[in-house]
Image (cartoon, rainbow, N blue to C red; front, side, top):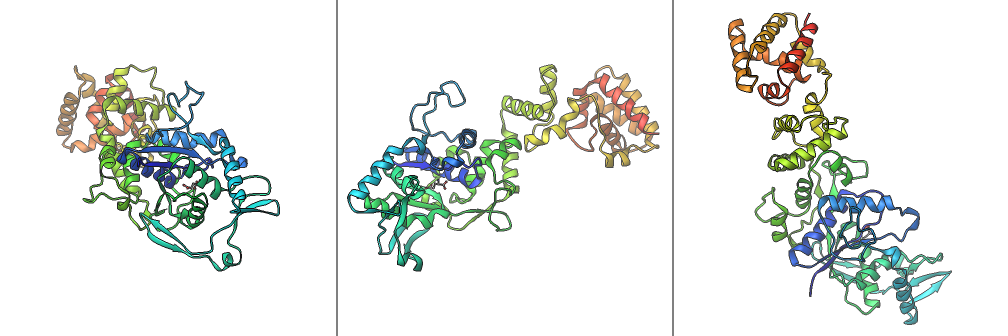
Length: 448
Ligand code: GLU
């Protein structure tokens, strides 16, 4: 039988990192088995529904590259969803639920109660075989003992989550339900509903939750909780995907950096870890740095320009060769693109703001004659390239009997405003003679 899995989020306006991981694990399992990955928007709660909330989910999955395989053809053939099918929306599947309620009613498996419709829940304990958690025997609680039946259609005519979730899983032929462990407590109800329809339930794999580094539950406001913030903060989807794979799944050899194609090959449900995963921002940053270093030049350039534009640094008016040369000095130096405006903003703005701490150290009166001498030496250079700049600076330092660092710090601060950054001689070459001399001149005014 072909694997059919689904990600079934409710549109809340927020895609939790745990939800993104659930989507990823479903997608990986579908790709690993050559099956189908379905996206189903559980939007029966009309009060919370909006296009924006749905877009948060769709754009989040698109950003991660987790494309869904199936669904109705969309009319929007030109937008970001070009060529995409689906997703399925529960709000468009009401007749199915209606039909299924009637079937239960006519078989005496459901009944009307104070305007609502209740399902006749089985009284016997239910065994939940779970591929991750193992076998769980769910007995009725004391409260359920008195009345285990539960509402499947509210008195206002709205079918409830348990019911629509099961009807869709059944009608969509879902073979494996891979979802967060918070749903394990609902699963007995779901299994009973499947049986009432005369169908064997799908296989279940409940994935342990993602906790904060300190072991507390991850709430909406915690760092890293919202998938949308990763793109905004300059992360690469391949780094985030890799990191999400490691949150609750581990390849047998403990390798951490894994291309998605590798994970697809290795991924399987029994390897999902049983204990809760802790969010480790440092590991994510490390992976991000690794992927960032390997980026193809064009993509590095494109993402950099985008991050700069978002910070108000427009590179459009500048020669492409200049922007490329400037960005080349940042490769391998930054981890996320959100660092770029602070790291390399000096290439793209006229005004230099000096880091106050560094200015206190470097812009001291005894440096004035030294920097003046350096300016003079730079001014005489016929070729303004990194090698000549380095030679000139070292010659001045030797003449003054000081270490190169004594000149390096003030000149870096003068030209970039920062105490650290790209390789000094390279950045000076990129900025060019005229601007370097002007910036040093301006700094000299500060020196006394
Ligand atoms: N709509 C449910 C949720 O967002 C789906 C649960 C499931 O995957 O079955 O948690």
